[in-house]
Amino acid sequence: MIELRAGSATDVGLVRSNNQDRLLIADPLFAVADGMGGAAAGEVASATAVNTLREVFEPIPSPTSDDLVRSAESANRAVWDLAEANAEMRGMGTTLVALALVEDGRLAIINIGDSRVYALHQGELRQVTEDHNLVAELVAQGRLSEEEAEFHPRRNIMTRALGVDPDVPVDLFVEDPESGDRYLLCSDGLPREVKDDQIAAILRRLRDPEEAARELVDEAKRRGGNDNITVVVVDVVDASKKGDAVDATTVVPPVAPEAPNQGTPSRRRGRRQRKHDTAESSRPKARFITIRVVLFVLLFLLILAGAAVAIAWYARSAYFVGLQGQNITIFKGRPGGVLWWKPTVARTTTTSVNDIESRHLPELQAGVQEPSLGAADDYVSSLVREKQQAESSGLPPAPPAATTSVPAPSSVPPTT
Ligand code: MG
Image (cartoon, rainbow, N blue to C red; front, side, top):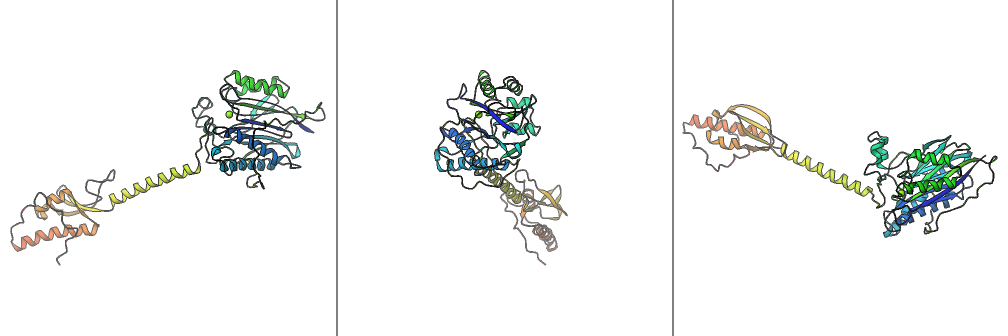
């Protein structure tokens, strides 16, 4: 029969003034949360998440992996509700990783954010969870190498966090543990400073989980300690071979306010999901791209597209009669064009400049606008008829147009 033994350590690090991480050891449930938000909000978020997770999960007599997911969803709602009710806590959020022994002796692991769970199996370290941050996703998509990711300026930008939206997708991983396996839950303050092979070496070297946890935290501090560091080491042991079982101890600092009543947890999500929410956040100063921001950007793009369509319509909705060499030609568009929409030839006529009164040439050089192709045709016909009538009546040609000639009327009534 499988049982769990755990050790833990947490430290503010060498740079931060307060520790916004929280950890939970409540056998068979273990968790790490890394809060974010101004003032004390980050601490409230991580503590509320961990406390709610425990309050919802612990009373379940024979919990399943789905129960762990639902408990995390309740924790999300608790942090969200608290932020909604308190203006100074708006925008707070937290990561959450949790591990629990569930039915059939399996281990359920959930993740939201960029805290991590690792598994050490027969000396080999494997990251179980996938980080919900921008850089990790770019690496997964093959758009960024591991080396580029390590020093990427946006490596702290999270794509998913607990408590920043009323609902959050929860990643679920189910493991079949073997005696001797070791699991590590940690906030990002550990892997930011200590490489995976160094983490593995410490986990292999120190058999006592408490000692291993403390050494991991100390190593992160020796390498910079730029963030809060929190570590929970959970050993899988065979109860029949085990000596004294370690009593479960809760080491959650009593900082958090009481979480609001959770009501009935949502059943909407039960399995590991890949769907991303729209929250994007980073620490230490929380930043979120909310649905409102996305909608605003979409609206702005729609307005731009609408303006482009309107200009295109204006540019292409008219016709004008002009000259192409010696020929009278009908163009589609506006004389001279509008922005990048240039006029195109709509119809080449057989009428040349010799077939019309020369006084019309200046206005044709400028382009005479007409509302439709038919109106443009009528205008050309009227110019030809005008000259023919003048010739048949024997009148002398009309004088050239004045320099301030007025364009011809949009349509000259045909004289049939
Ligand atoms: Mg952190």
